[in-house]
Length: 160
Image (cartoon, rainbow, N blue to C red):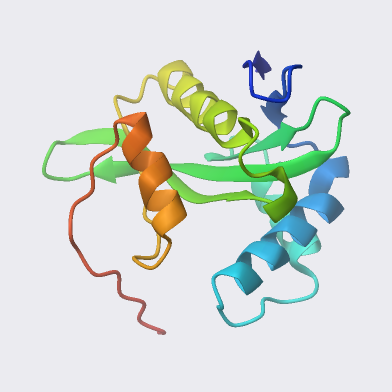
């Protein structure tokens, strides 16, 4: 699955599935994303831990990468299939979407979201769900421009 979308850069970025050789760059972007959200640091061996899960036979996890026209990977969207119990139907959950700061505002985010929508359609999934921190006004405006709506809820984590 490779999609081309016309951004403000003049040439099209490329949205493509991550490959095993992308894991070091993906881990760099994840660590930058974690720092951006002021979250606790993640393990240094993140690439080694992600690889077996992401590239296993039958994995229901997908990472799409956003490449600038010169081929530099500057963003990612991590997705998995989830199940909406109330609707008795599966949907695509976008766990993360991140663009390196210098890559924002050039159409990569819209291209990445178009790639996520295409992935959902390819998998026969009727909708995509995600979350963003309530302080991330730029992301909130971006998602609103796409026509996405939000629902007020709190997300909990319970260590067991």
